[in-house]
Length: 74
Image (tube, rainbow, N blue to C red; front, side, top):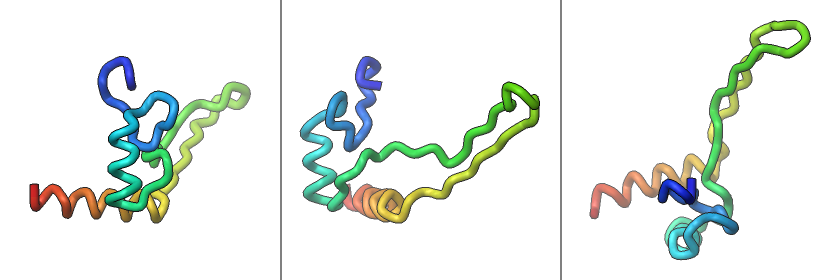
């Protein structure tokens, strides 16, 4: 993502330091803000369709809500 100028917040290796600091200071977020809620694939041996769902972690949801509220005032 870095190479197409879309750094991921919280990525300490390839992300942007100023973005990570902003999210730590303003939103108390100390994690990588990257998550997959759904993945599907065919099992290589059985050919069965496998689907896995994962809700957003609580901290991720909190940050998303706070960022959305912040956007109302910018």
